[in-house]
Image 1 (cartoon, protein in one colour):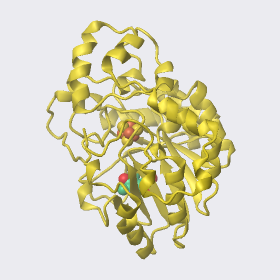
Image 2 (tube, helix red, strand yellow):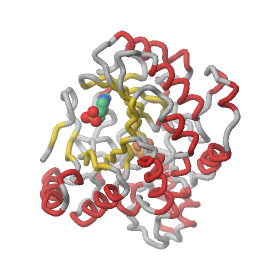
Image 3 (cartoon, protein in one colour):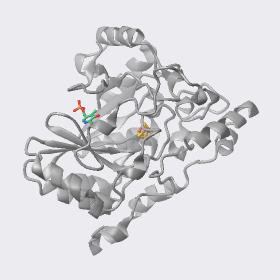
Image 4 (cartoon, protein in one colour):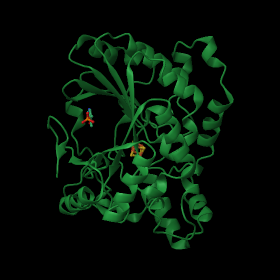
Length: 354
Ligand SMILES: *Cc1c(COP(=O)(O)O)cnc(C)c1O
Ligand code: SF4
């Protein structure tokens, strides 16, 4: 487990942040997501009990959870089917023995991200935009995650630790957009986000603020009215990129949260990862895209899996991915078809595969 991960609650560390007294008075809905996060399942046996899965899943789940801890919010759990070990949502989060397989080409740092750091916590690979690792924490632990081996312990943890990254952004006038990523930046409390938004908003050459987050999908309570207000309080144009892989994720309270985000006036995009046995067929991808556009969310990227150690069992061939995209082009409006891409170390953009 990466040292910097904090799975026990929202990332506050407010003692180190300048907190305005007004922000201290939390509305009821802000408390609600904190409670939902605290109630997330972290024990493999509890997950197996809740879903009434066969006992043979217990040992492997406990073992693999030692590599990368299990974490599943109850809202996400409620969209899974009981007694179904093949449930496409479950397969994204259930620890398996296959994670111990050593497969050539699957490495701890597949993206060689260490090479692109102007400052701690800042990654700049592409022109005009840079990515700030806001926190290492997530509300769900996706077993295929390319950051499962990420050294989050080395990233900034206090406001003062951000200074070099903020200075590097201020000094580089070619940057127009900052991406908040992680981990999941919406694991930060609204007051920490507000401090960060204010600091970024004061950098005059920045125009847009993009938030890459899976919380609206797995912990929809996070899309509170106070968060929406905060999102629209910055001078920067906000863009939210969510991460759903299967149409079964985009249901119920998650669909409501996405609708609220879209209706608040923010551009919402989705990125998905192509995953074996989860979404590697035409019908699933077509239904995912249709459901997203019905909610006003534009399918942005379909990612070829990054070849990270412990995730080989999720890989789908690029050829299959291309065939799915070709089929989507026939079935769906052009705007509903995501770009199928993969990340290439040293590339100037995400490489289109179709
Ligand atoms: C993916 C990524 C981006 C965003 O790329 P877009 O094509 O603009 O979505 C930016 N910086 C880094 C380091 C990335 O990995
Ligand atoms: S939410 Fe994103 S960063 Fe977090 S574990 Fe899942 S894929 Fe990885």
